[in-house]
Image 1 (cartoon, rainbow, N blue to C red):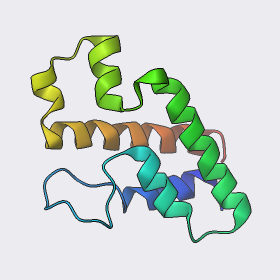
Image 2: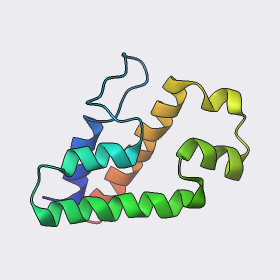
Image 3: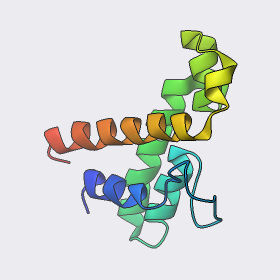
Image 4: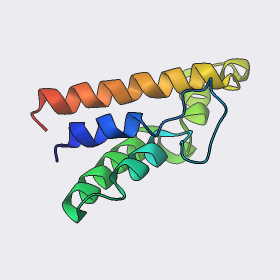
Length: 106
């Protein structure tokens, strides 16, 4: 399976920030990608792990994108505490990753 297809699957596992949060959804991109790939063959799980590593490298030691936005881009905490805004940001980031991998034919 192409990496972009795994990321499309991850959209189904990423919480939307609006509906009641449920255990089958993930707040973060890495968790959503993990859930999307957990029942796939090993080579697909490795591709998914590579994307998660790419995300972790991007946010560095901050661990969470909200902390990264605050530390790196001076986004005020009041915005980071708004679940819907944060989840919209994560969805846009996921859409960007999908487009990037699709353009690369992956």
